[in-house]
Length: 234
Image (cartoon, rainbow, N blue to C red; front, side):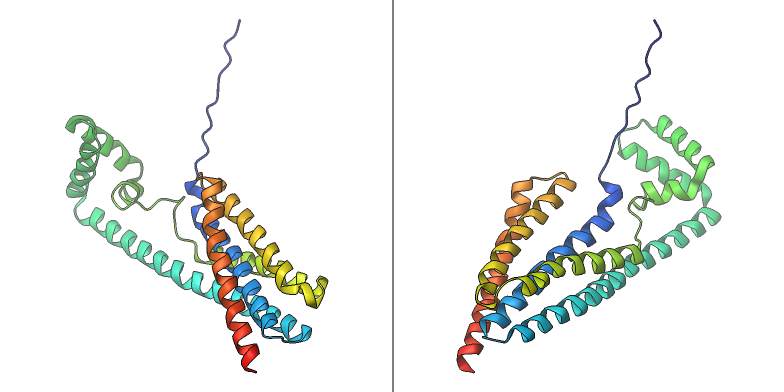
């Protein structure tokens, strides 16, 4: 009877760290910022049209701000990676023997015998010396490489998606019930986002939901209080 070959496939989370972080941050910020602004303006006894205008402004400005901030931040990381890559390339050209010893020393620290570490370093150097040093010496790999445009787009789209839900609620919910329904709906959405993000990252869904829920409730309460205060003064 022929043997069945079992293919062991592993799925790791590192390949999605960059875009996942930006997407989750954007969606959470979109919900919290827009819902809080809507609740704050509503608590100040503004008109339905003013509340809707504030929500649209929050969506557009927030999405652009998130995209720009993420792009600048990740671009700085990409610039650093490029500079480190160029430095390592020059060192390999000018001192290949020293770089080989350095690579072997890294493997010795990880538990290999000196002879085996040397053999591994030689084989990896012959295969792709630059890639070996970037990965094992500097921790730069293709899966974790900085991608500014991807992070910026993920942030903008996710922020807009998160902000759109409380904004649509303004159109559908009667003015008298706006604060309560948007507050409860936003908290439920934030808890769901926190749970999904935690699940995707391999963490506890309950802990992830509570973290986002607590900060979301705090933001809604503060902005509602500020709005009510200004509304009373006016």
